[in-house]
Image 1 (cartoon, one colour):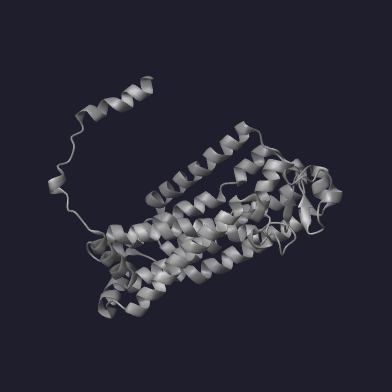
Image 2 (cartoon, rainbow, N blue to C red; image 1 turned 90 degrees about the vertical axis):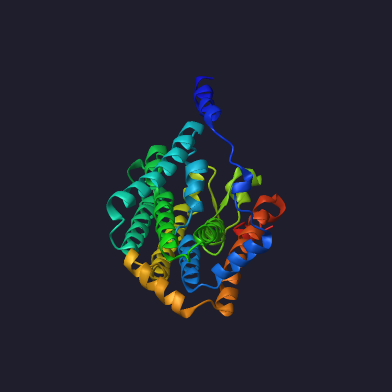
Length: 322
């Protein structure tokens, strides 16, 4: 009650803005702004960077989730601490960048954060094989920070680039476009991470699937109902292969897509000047529109399939088959 009261008191001094002083924009005006933004050369570069990096270098390891919640069996308290610590990692990443890395090479920052996350990802191999009894809830919580650390740095990087590169008056439109695509790419990243389980024979077989013993699990899945069944179904090897695959894809794609991010404010100015000289292009606009809508539509469609139990088992979305 005290906190609610303290937070409510400042509202008494807030004054409502006079609507007549706020510019009114129609849907047509907004659509023109979006289209002008999509036709810009620097917008296309940033879209390629955001989609490539957010989709293919920042994987959520589904195998690690199975390890924590089925094999290791985190308690509700431990799961809560895990969630809080991941968001703290995001905040720490933003603070480190603002304090120490703002005026350094932005691309090196992206390379370094991705490689750091890949290193933490590989530490999970020790957990899979229970080296030194590391199938421990608190150890996995400690190393489960990579995704949000990289996410924090990536969002700050492209936000700064948007501020420096956007055409005058289109900063907010450009940022909203990129953040929407980035969020969709994050969903797509999870989907791809799930889909990779099937070809690597690492899909989980759990009690949730009415499989109470190893004999009910297919040979292309890992029984995660207990530590012993996990070992007997070759879980450590299959999850290690899955982990290495994600790591290799992340590092390779980082070096492919990061060059589409300017390395400094100075290069932002150079790119902006080049973009203004090149002018807007209808073809470039259609390419940007395709990338944006394609990412959002695909992520949305597969996310719906994962929600429905009758379709979440499909191999195309990472299931063991229906």
